[in-house]
Length: 128
Image (cartoon, rainbow, N blue to C red; front, side, top):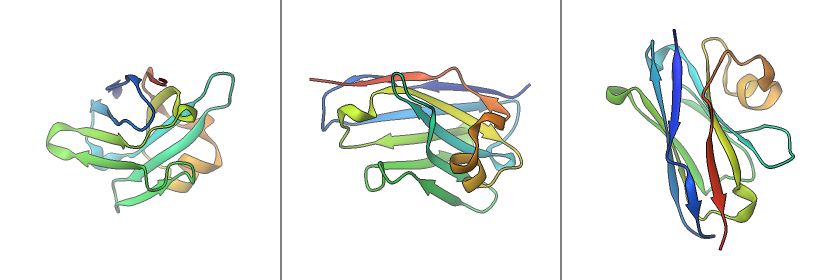
């Protein structure tokens, strides 16, 4: 069974940085498009950044361009989301997700509800 485990969340001051990790077990990164989704309190879940490991294609939401970077370490079977210059609006639960068929647009933009595999989420709080 494919499993995704997020880590790295916590409390950080505005302007600070965090790195979220998503470790995949049961398969290899090459088999999947991996996405990070953000759910702010009381809001709908939104795609933040996705990477298609079959061709290296990436997507970033406008709100995080220039601040967040998605990357991978195949040896560790892990995908990272480096978050810099954090602002209070970044607060919320960040979910890692994987799908074997979606490209970055269908995964991160079109409809997240059908994405096959999800982690349990990691809470990020940006506050003074």
